[in-house]
Image (cartoon, rainbow, N blue to C red; front, side):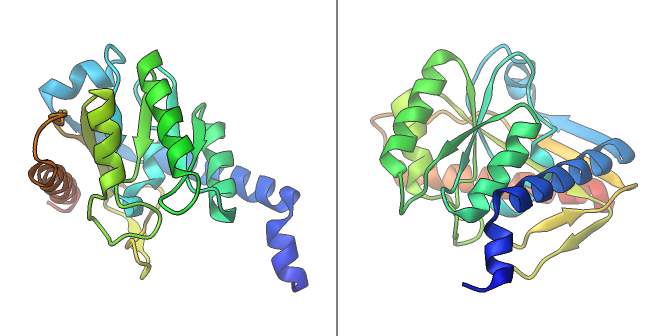
Length: 221
């Protein structure tokens, strides 16, 4: 392994990068003018009166950390690989907790941990595409947690007037300071435990994509 790769994996390097990235997120958040659109049915969840699963696309995750309901713990599902180690440190700097797991590693234990957290009354943040996509396509894992827990899925997203979009699989958006950020929260979606899964999966996917279009429209009008 080269020196540069060893350096990137070093705990001190990960700690420094997580601090820098967390400070950048705070810089963007506090220097941007924020506009919000919260569906009336989602208001009790955003006030911390109820708990559920908050779902956002992988490419729109960056500004979700400072935008969270009060009063309840938030657990963020993260990959157990190196990138997940970095993101989990950033997550903790915003007062959130991490649950490690993915479709290829630790999935069953992560599912049990999420179900226990929801039963305690905590919230879960999740990217329904999984760690590798396809982009903006809901995978079955999110559906399973919603069905087993009986808790709703709340679509959430953001958009920014000043941003850089990467040519990555998830079309990751890096918001820039001193812009206008739109935060949107859609109506909670309850999955029928005994119903047909595919129509419900498509309904979530369509709701999340419609919310992205709404947020983009609010920042590009």
